[in-house]
Structures are given as structure tokens and as C-alpha cells.
Length: 232
Image (cartoon, rainbow, N blue to C red; front, side, top):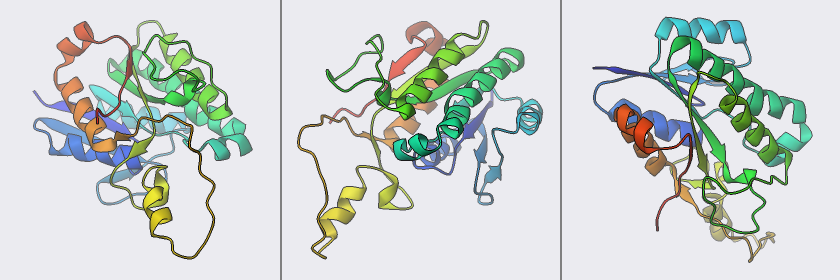
């Protein structure tokens, strides 16, 4: 049986790794969506255009949708809170409603920014307490999709990401390479107290392939809310 999978945000750091994992897997038909880029196997689609989104999804008839697209930059979210809420909370709500009507499983990629960072590591049942608008918008997305009765949804919270990226500045971990290599004498502000759990995007992509390939096991073994991090 061929599994039909839609990946949103497929040109991003995480989305491109997820796309690579699914396209390399057997018995997968993949539709890769991107907001800003097309070509090279990517289809350009504005997820805020509900009519066009529903048309694409209805025509493709996915079994699984991996929703990687998001406004993931906390500073940008603070400057454009309405835009962040639309992409991070409203779009997942719409996708969950489509999950119900089109009968696909929605995987919503969330973040550890839904926590306040005071007592890591966190379990899926840990109390949320976002300190920034970005984290709140992602938490709102979680709550929105869980509220849709009849939708099949899985929330995967991932921490700070690293791995193959167009630019090192695309991830908070990769950018350390540029900082170490910078011999200009520039001063960088760093902290020595935050505890983070960097996770490789390749590991996440491979996990999602296994999850979707064993759907019955996924439904019986996993709760709707998961956390993913690389074990170092």
C-alpha cells in the first residue's frame, strides 16, 4: 500500500529533512509544500489561502500530513503577533478540521517554547507556561487541534534543532559554527545557564517515517502528545 503524505514547510530546516526521509522511504507518495519556494519537487502554496489549500488537499487525498510550517522566529513573532497567530494557531486549526473531513492523520510540529524553561527535561504531560508570544501561539495551535472532535492528530514537541541547513544562521546550534570561525574580533552575547536539548532534524524525519509507516502501532502505542529529542 502506498502512503500519501503532505509535508508543509518543506523548504525549511526541519521540513527539508522530513521531506528527504519520506521521499527516500518505500511506498510513499509525497507532496512537498512551501510558502516561498517552488521547483525542485516543491509546490508553492500559501497556507493562509483556505480555498486553495482545501483544493490541493482534496485533490491529493493524503493519508498523513506533517505540518512543519510555522513562524519559528520568536523575535519576528513579537513584531508581528497577528501574523504569528494566524500561521501558528489558525492554520493548524484549519488542518485539523480537514483531518476530520478528509480522514488523514495530522502531525503538528510544536516546540519546547510552550514551557517556561525552569525545570527541564519535560514530559508530554508537564505543565505548559510559555513566556513568549511565539510559545503561546504554538500552544494555542496545540489546543486548537486537540479541540476538534473527530480529528486524528499527533503533536510532536521538538526542542532546538540542528542539522543540514541552507545557512548556519537558520538554526541556533549551527550558527555556533560561524561564531567560532569568526576571527573579526566581534563580541557575541552568550549565556552559560540555559539547558537545551539539541535534536537532529534527520532523526526527527526518520522517526516520522517510522511513525506513519506503522499507523496501527502509532495509534495504540503513542498518545496524541509526544516529545522528541536526540539521545546523545
